[in-house]
Image (tube, rainbow, N blue to C red; front, side, top):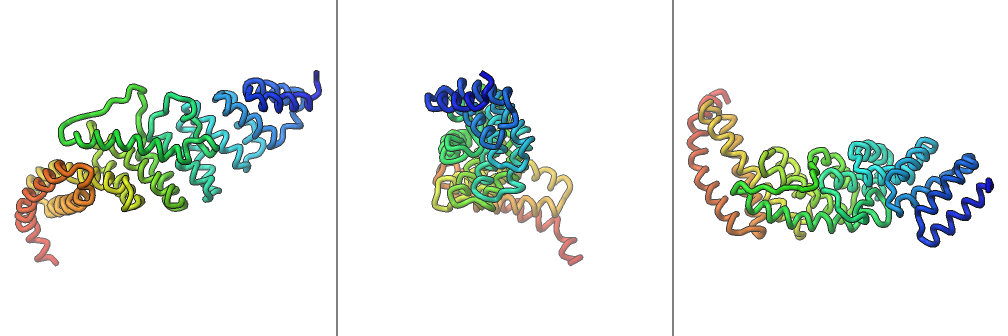
Length: 325
């Protein structure tokens, strides 16, 4: 009963039968019997069993022990990341992902960064299969990320169409998106990932930006995410026009906030800022017109009405600048 090899054999039989709890139990007994046999293969095997059994608690426990013993083992770090994600420990996911991408710019690192970004942006799915991120065959980092993001995009586009009224979306899970915190991970994906990964990063940036257009708004934050999404997206894909459409709204909506200040302060700098925002909005809305032609045409009309006012403000407020130049 105290032969560690027998428990190892038992765990193999349990895995063959897809009885993952049995496999973890056997491996835990093996470790208690003779911990000296716990090599990287042991920790990988018990992590796989815990993950496939959707046992986040034991996955985190054993991946932590393995990672402490083998701190440079990237496979164990990925399992640890998976466990944290399954357990909803987002801050721990961020910390471990930073350790992974500091040493790994291959597809493995790209997958980990994409998974961390998704954890920060997309609410967890109710089914367990969608709760397996961080670099496994059944993870949400591969094609699943693209599918989840695409589905989320569709909802976001619908919400964005109502943004000119004061529509908001509610999340019954209590999840709070942290899109701006995902930017470093998505920049990593864009830098080191292939075309598919870049498109997935653009989709997540779009998804993260959409809630920022609604109350309480963070228009500059949305603009930051959407500019990066436009840069990364395939111009022939679906994300590119959608990101441009929201970028057009994010820049246009800033103008009414700045305009009273420019007039009150008679500020040449603020008037120039308005001019730049209107030009950016015009360009982005035109590129995203296919998403919502009626709303785009309406907003382009608003921009045209602003232009004479901006020209007048520039003429009145920037005289001194011309003389100094």
